[in-house]
Amino acid sequence: MKLAILSRNGSLYSTRRLVEAARARGHSVRVLDPLRCYMRIAPGGFAMHYKGRPVSGYDAVIPRIGTSITRYGTAVLRQFELMGSYSPNPSDAILRARDKLRTHQILAAQGIDLPTTVFGDNPDDTQDLLSLLGPPPHVIKLTEGTQGAGVMLAEKASASRAVVEALRGLYANFVVQEFVAEAGGSDLRCLVVGDRVVAAMRRQAPEGEFRSNLHRGGQASAAEASPEERAVAVRSARALGLGVAGVDLVASARGPLVLEVNSTPGLEGVEGACGVDVAGAIIDYVAEKAKKNQ
Ligand SMILES: Nc1ncnc2c1ncn2[C@@H]1O[C@H](COP(=O)(O)OP(=O)(O)O)[C@@H](O)[C@H]1O
Ligand SMILES: [Mg+2]
Image (cartoon, rainbow, N blue to C red):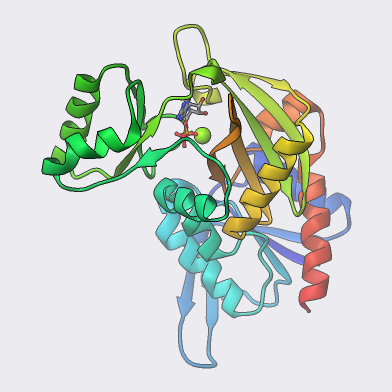
């Protein structure tokens, strides 16, 4: 297959591993910086140029689009889709996953359990909004945050109200959730490829921290996902339309809850912790799907 990887930097671990895995399987592969792709849009005349030259004829594109370039990156990906390339994660699916509020609505509509979440706009409604959620602690999250950066814990009702008011003042988009104390600062990242969980790792937050993100000092270790966790992870990726996803689950008294579905999961932590060739699994999946797409 002729494959393009949309990534800003070919030396990033995940991009390098995908290139390696594709070459090892005899595919032709090129890394394209999405910000250097530009497009001609006309009926019957979709075209793409890259650094002054036309690009075309890619059987498949693997998007590795960072959150800082979601809009432009998904527009480039959509152009590839319109030109007939297969993508395991279509542009619309990435946009769904980038918004935690939208993700939660889609998952809950499919009967997939998650921390109960509320969302509202007017300050006059804050009191009643928080009462819909139940007593604190509450977790307050920016809807487009990542790596744990926009996630806050409010232990008292007064703290919840204060954070909600402060975020409103900044015109930030956020949701408020029940805090899942049983999780104990730990979550399970399931790497979904197609209809399988190819690797799973447990991430444990450091002492005194509830966020288990590796960027916040979380420790990763290989884990065995239970059949229920696997099923929830695969259903979540499918509900959003993602062929490749990192689904984060927390254990609760009522079973696994989905925290978020990542459309550009990092491979370094999970390959390091589990010793699984996740990049190879992604390439095999994409090659098979691209063949059917022809
Ligand atoms: N409702 C919650 N209850 C308990 N812990 C949570 C909750 N929401 C998030 N966390 C913790 O915070 C981390 C970051 O939250 P997440 O929603 O995944 O945001 P981000 O996109 O920034 O990673 C999670 O991995 C988990 O450890
Ligand atoms: Mg997360």
